[in-house]
Image (cartoon, rainbow, N blue to C red):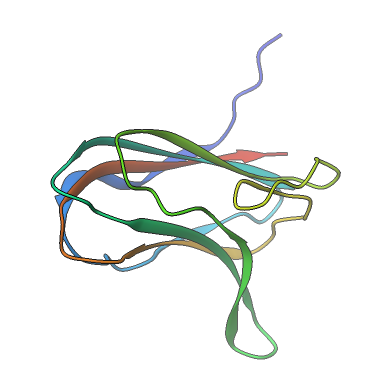
Length: 123
């Protein structure tokens, strides 16, 4: 039996030298997620830090769920959030996702990094 996992591209493959607008998505009805960030090219010494936040409707503020480690080279990074998983600093959080979420990719300098980012929601 196969199960279809809802998935979306949050950032298409583009060389970026500055922090892009955070990518928002809706996780209503799901419990967790995997975020897959695939860096395919770098110039010099880029540093990009991914963060996953949820929106608190009552306060009107974004609240952090997980902050990843700085990405400085080519390769694939997977961030995981799901209730009951073993937490790992900058990689996995034992938490529940819900409602409005966003992925932000904070660039530490103007060196280029080409990457994609996709979210896979888990029921």
